[in-house]
Length: 189
Image (cartoon, rainbow, N blue to C red; front, side, top):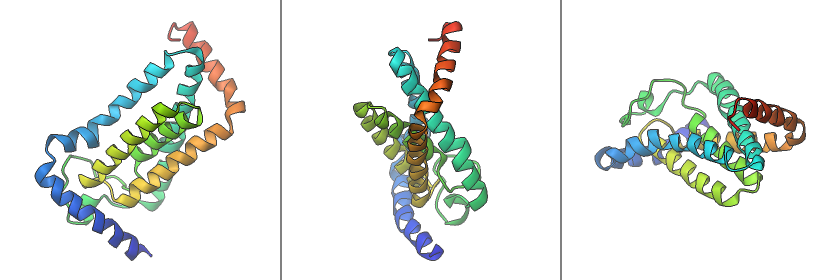
């Protein structure tokens, strides 16, 4: 099974990496590394949109925290899969330190946010975020930072995290209301 997964990953990764090593240039760096910084800006914009939107932004934030620093970190440390540029003969097109590759933290966080907005009823915004998540994930594979199964697993974790946060929405309302009150006291809400 592991051999099949590795072959599957390499069949996708090698041609993409070869193409983008010759043709990516600025796009590699922008889409694989910098585009993710638009996500916090979106969360801040949603936070200040309305009182209802504050809870939506917090749900997305909680989903991201569950997906990235909790689930992805635990699984990553257990699996400890090296990055493609360390083992597969692909060219590292943007710098990344050699940490674990599986699952993709970026995919976990991005899909958690996108699915959280979807579950909160912000469908148009969630579709835009899903597109951003797919573009970033694609370029993280193309640049040799991740295997395709890393981003698939990350996307699954992100969707799972958003679903779990949505499932526990009523008990988490206490935390949301508390954080909104603190933000209001600090004049941040």
